[in-house]
Length: 202
Image (cartoon, rainbow, N blue to C red; front, side, top):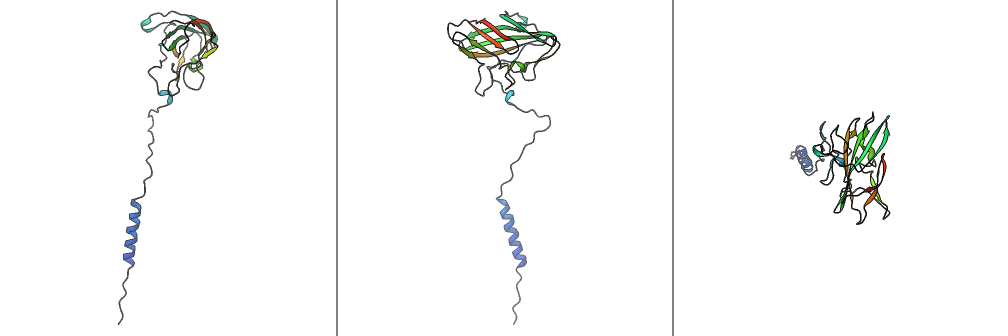
């Protein structure tokens, strides 16, 4: 008597298919990548500001040495440099020490025919007026602008900023304090040069 053959092929295929599907369940998915949509704002290091860092301030057409509400500020010293057949004046309006910090305010007035990029007052490493320093001759020490925890200058930003012809803009820089007894220092501003023996207000 001949025993009929049992065909297992369909069953084997079903089992193999089931195992294949089971093996796919535990595979990790590739990570999702978010592509920013056109026009989305991008945060950069220059976008971050600290509460201590002042912003570049006066509006177009304001006069050198004018404060909020048009109140004139005393001008401690001025220097000028040539630009495009005209002159740019840099006026120091504040060089004052309080506690552990010394604050500098200076106003740039452009009387030339060419816009002056504010970044020219910086070192070029960041969009800041961080190229300014002063020298304490009595102790033979150069003071650089103060820096926050992330390395940014505690000073006005120059991001996309220019002083246009006929315009004045005021910038600020914060430094560490001078030792007791020091009443003046030599301030150095790129392009403008040295303000020798500038008195310190306390």
